[in-house]
Image 1 (spheres, chains in turn cyan, yellow, green):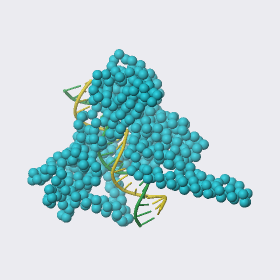
Image 2 (cartoon, rainbow, N blue to C red; image 1 turned 90 degrees about the horizontal axis):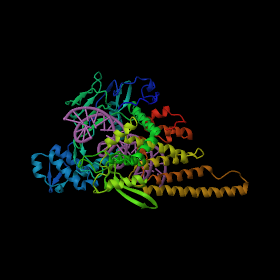
Image 3 (tube, protein in one colour; image 1 turned 90 degrees about the vertical axis):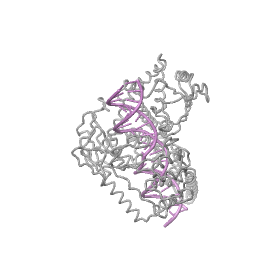
Image 4 (spheres, protein in one colour; image 1 turned 135 degrees about the horizontal axis):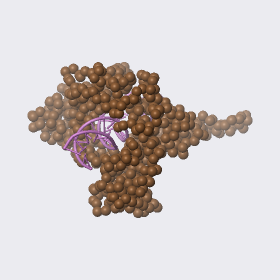
Length: 571
DNA sequence: CCGGCCACTTAGGACCCCGTTC
DNA sequence: GAACGGGGTCCTAAGTGGCCGG
């Protein structure tokens, strides 16, 4: 994508790990070129399969069967998962069995015809013992393991990109195993095959030291394409999609892209009012397609829905976004809970996370929805004259670089900024300020529907915390009465123990925060949707140390923002 | 236009590690 | 010194959206 021409001239001026020169002093490349020089060691391959010891056996129909190496490896994948609920699922078991049989020899295949007659018990027990043994390793063993891992990171985890030594995000080839998609995935249980060097394309500079393939192997291809950012790629066998090895989020390349993303969202801020009045007009259009586009945009803007690309049926779990909503996902209520024109959404979105929301909408939108649903079956598309391509084409005509997802970024960031202004106050103490920050963050997470499964130990840990609070309260009460006594006797001045009160407040704030956060995931919005400059400026204004908001890796990722942002920054 | 392909961002959960508490 | 619990990292799936060729 081309860099929009009207971006500010002063780019991010953070410094990288190896160079102190501000980025904006470096040459800019022509369109599409991502680097001049790229050198790396190639991906790291997972260890080869270790055959089972003789005393661990697989049984079919009660009889021990020595499997071929390939079939055994796949059997072990299944055996390792036996504690998981999904090994009991029909689709998972059928997919697994079908793929497993493909790995068997002719003889094995003619013997093993029923998964229910397979006994993986010994293999499963061995695996559990291994996990247990790993947990019980001595300090020395753990240290040795850690050092060995560090050595791998040192050797494979970095690359040289132009003048910078950069950390690679995922330098390890994904190990083989059984595919477990999210939700009701039709391909769950299929065998995800082992990747060989012969499957891997290496991308690097012609004049760099080209990585050597593992002994006895060769790469699929050596490519020198400086219009892409990946270092290596391979095609995965489940969906047939390409997997990439790319840089870490703290790299210059990723940082610049991130900065650019937020600059586009800020540009939307300056023209969003015009765009809104445009789509309000379009709600009345004579063209059905235009009306559908307007309603979709209304949802994307107001509810921060994802665009909703079409998906191939049977290839993935049945999930939708805005443009792919079906009639069955929406219920219209003329009246609901004292509101008029309420739209009830109930659908599975990305990662099969449920989106459930009852939203009062303007009458024109409501009427249009009724019209779109007329004479349709529950399984029919709500927006039959619209797709993401048409929507994005329209958006890019309104503003350079504008797509559906920019609205999510814009609305997330602007919401954080507004909420911070509304909720936080310089007179609060630090714990209160942090609660306010988290609440602002939470408002965004709720808008974007970033959910998490409630932690398994949630009730337990809330109870423990409450017990602590009660204990502190008691202590405080005791201290107060002691003070009273002291005052009476010695006419001592001063308040009750301020430290104790502070501790109590801190605990109470912590309890509130945790309770409110039960099913909300803050990390996704913090990492992907909230312009970090808003948070940096807030910290400066509130005199809150940045480390309270961002951990080390987040500070590395947002180095560009930390370096360029003053207290007066406005999104 | 449309489908396939490609590149890249966004996402939740598993797992690991380390400090705290009993 | 074991158990706990919570933050941080790792993993990789699942999205978005551009481009190209028919």
